[in-house]
Image (tube, rainbow, N blue to C red; front, side):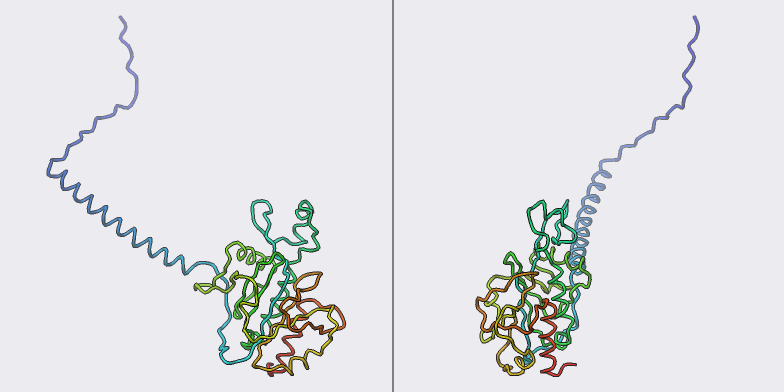
Amino acid sequence: MVRPYAVKGRTLKKRRVEEPAPDEEERTEDVSEVGEQEGDQIEEIVDERRAEEALDQIPGLPINAPVDRAKRPGVIFVLEKACLEVGKVGKNFQILNSDDHTNYLKKQNCNPADYRPDIIHQALLAVFDSPLAKAGRLQAVYVKTEKGILFEIKPHVRIPRTFKRFCGLMSQLLQKLSITAVGKREKLLNVIKNPVTRHLPVNSKKIGLSYSSDKLVNLSNYVATASDDTPLVFVVGAMAHGVISKDCIDDFVSISEYPLSAACCLNRICSAFEQRWKIT
């Protein structure tokens, strides 16, 4: 009878496992329990520190240097019918505009020419870049969208320069209802309740601007005759076409013989007050 060949391979040696003594088992259990308790405490401390750091590192909006506005007359602006509508394009929510979302708007049976968020962007830059705002004479800015959403912008906000970043900021505001400052919990942009008159000073004078008004005024003379004791609120349309609402407006005027953009109207208003208060 032929002897079978052995299978070549590496033989594994059995390892001897020494069982710990009963006293040693109890000690290891006690040490492990203490280690787990200390580990839990360390994790809680780390989590708390991470949470505090996260609050400080939340991305927000940069602000300008604070200016003392106490006991100084200022101006209030209300920008009406701003086209800021959020739509879900693909997987993301975006502010709809006529340049980037023409096909999407046509599929929704909407006129792309009506979606002009660039108008409100230019208008806000005209206000916040003016010497009037930098001198601390801007009291407040309120924006009312075409859908009736009202939000307030603090006077020391730095508006994004690029249109794309501005649309991202407005999309975040309309979804989260507020935007905070960088490294702080101060709300710089905040959605508030309608109507806007509940947020205005009691003795304020509300002035609506429109090309369709029959009352043509020289803006410099009009501002010069106003009293500093009566805060002036200028209501300007931030849409491509249409007229602002005359509700709760004390005076309805026109400042030019020609139709002007919202940014041009706001530049003229700021310049008139800068001449009156000698802001250079």
